[in-house]
Image 1: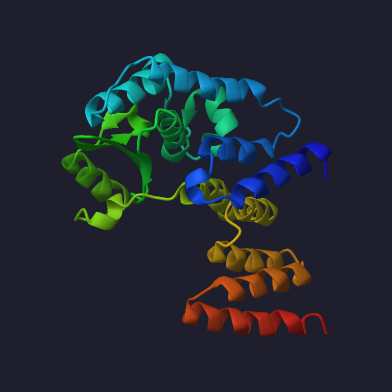
Image 2: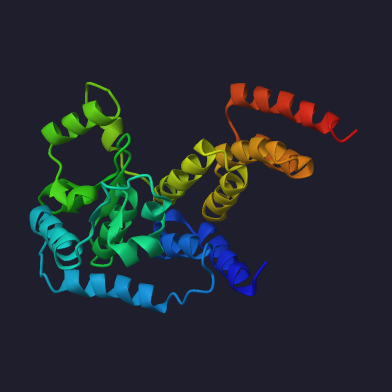
Length: 275
């Protein structure tokens, strides 16, 4: 492994060990992307993230949700022209924060990280929402909160718009409270990486799938589902000892009795391959 990659992994592992409320979401997303290009200098990207913070601070948005939401959209979508990539939505570059910054295009969750980063740096409460199939963000103020759609240039996502999104994207008919549940920073990063992982798996690229699972576990080392999936993927790669290790880790972390029984049966199966 290159020295650059090793240093990046060490930094990500340190971030993964932090309490969620101390995790720098944009820095973590940047480092996750940097593992694909460890030779690239991150200083310009970090300066850009800092510039976004300064530009939002210059908007003097006050304490109410509306002006705060408008300030974020004005800076990120307006001044910096960030927008969703409708033409090549499934391009993995749309979930790589370095490439998103380069192209000013991305998936909702990648763009949303910029909004979260710039808003939280002002001391505002800005969270990602666990909306099915289309990441949204919530901006809070003293008068309440507003939901923004980072993919569509930070437009306000009111309940009718969210209802329409829900029906078109997931087929569900009724908007429920769990659709707008705030996400932990770590879960936002997992959702970002999962976009790349899922596309790799769909394309039959098991090596890239394993790489993205390992990357997810750097920032969320106790995320049991990723250990379970890594165990399955490593078995497909013929890496039986690594498959056993990942599955054993899943069994330590998981509280799902049914999944645990399945994993035990899988573990018994793959251990026999060593004999």
